[in-house]
Image (cartoon, rainbow, N blue to C red):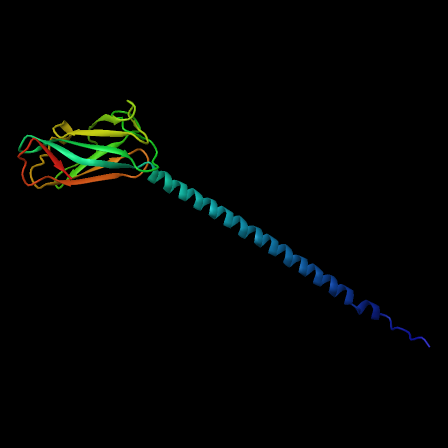
Length: 194
C-alpha cells in the first residue's frame, strides 16, 4: 500500500537548496580570491616599476660624474697660492658634462677652507684631449684653472700648511670633492700637491 505524505513535508526538504548555497559561497570565495590576487599582482608590478625607476635614477646620478686625473698644481707668489690647475675626465661609463664656465646648466665649483666658503668660483677650461667645445665627453681630458686672486676669492690667502676643498658640481651626477693641503714651504713658483 502506498504511503501518504503529510502535507508540508515537501516544503521542508532543503537538500537541493543547501547544495546551491554551497556553490554560491564557493563561487564568492573564488571571486574574492581572484580580486585579491589581482590586487597583489598589481601592487607587485607597481613596486617593481618604482624600484626600476629608482635604480635608473641612481645610475644617472653616478653616471654623470667626473674624476680628477693627475696632480693638482698650484702657482705661488712665494707667499700664497695664486692659482690652481687640475685635469678632469669622465668616470667610466659617465655621461657628458657641461664645463662651460659662463653657460647655463653648467658645472659649478665651490671653494671652502677653515675661514671661507665661496659657492660659485669662476674658472676657465682648456681642452687637452678632445674637440674644442666645452662639453666633457667620453675619452676627453680638460684642464681646469682657478685664479685665486679673483674678486670672489679676495678673502682667501692660502699660505703654508692650509687645507682647502673644491667641490665640482655638474648639472647632473655626483659631486667631485678635491681636498688638498698646501706644502710646508712655498719656495717655488709652481708646486705639485698630490
